[in-house]
Length: 73
Ligand code: SF4
Ligand code: SF4
Image (cartoon, rainbow, N blue to C red):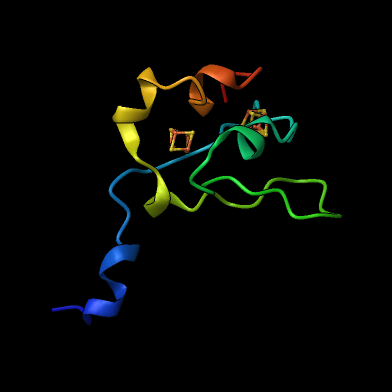
């Protein structure tokens, strides 16, 4: 049994970016849940924070990162 303080960090969804990613930062700007992050001064987006993603529910939302990515990454 894992300590409960880690419970919320068990990712429900696996977010990946393919090699096609050009680090444009669109996903970081669109996701309101902070899954994608591009730290000031970094030229690459940070590894996705999976556990914050709402998953398939997001596909119907205007901000869905999958629909907005210019490279389908
Ligand atoms: S929107 Fe797509 S191409 Fe742009 S940083 Fe995110 S995953 Fe990469
Ligand atoms: S699918 Fe939605 S909640 Fe998940 S990372 Fe993309 S924009 Fe954020």
